[in-house]
Length: 344
Image (cartoon, rainbow, N blue to C red):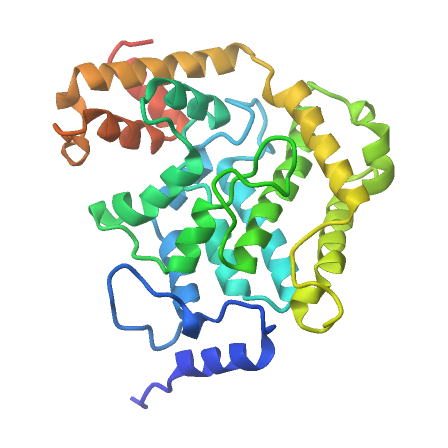
């Protein structure tokens, strides 16, 4: 058998030659929490991407709600398909801007690993019940640091962990942040790609569900972005690339920042506000059932910790273990578990 060439070194050298001077280089990562031998055929960011894809938390995303709980069709977005769309948008933007596509992909694939069952309804219930509060971006970081791999975590690089933690947007402006600003431009792209993805696919799902009609969308936003899903996505992505072109290193006269033009940003925020008013804040029977399930599961396990899997029992912090367990459930498993204990 021939000796294996140093593929990782070749890939790292290719990054130095091709990527923008503002890109995060895998060879210059701030490293992992626990030192380990590097891969012979993958950069550190590629390795992080693969660890996320092979994790149990990633697989469970296919049975977690994005917006619509227990939809009666096969084409509604799930947390997994949302994650894949975010990854695709982030990769398109970072590739065009000569940023590190592998880093953006890893952040995108891991950004929602800590999301609860039943979408934002589940997150709201846990945030109300857990004294420490709950945000899915913080839980996503906890998943990759502490919960995955039988409690050992995935030992991801600092840049990927930072991007996962700081991907959340504040309500009202898709360019604003909840937790903080990512340390890398790739992390900023992922935060923006997350918003662009859900604005577009949530409109499609809401129309599919009969909650809104395409004609209900704000005319001023449609005039800027376009009338079809593909046109809206293309307008948003091309606008980000054009406005952020200074990041590519090809236009020294432009600032090296990730941004959007004011007309497109305003249109995106207008659509986001519309979705909050007409879709996200609506309450149907499925949403109320989900609230009941999450609330009852939380109280049940808090009162009967012996029913928790052993790895989630912590006599020093029993609520933390309950939150970690039920936040990791899929919609189906949460429902079946509540039924099995007779608490719904």
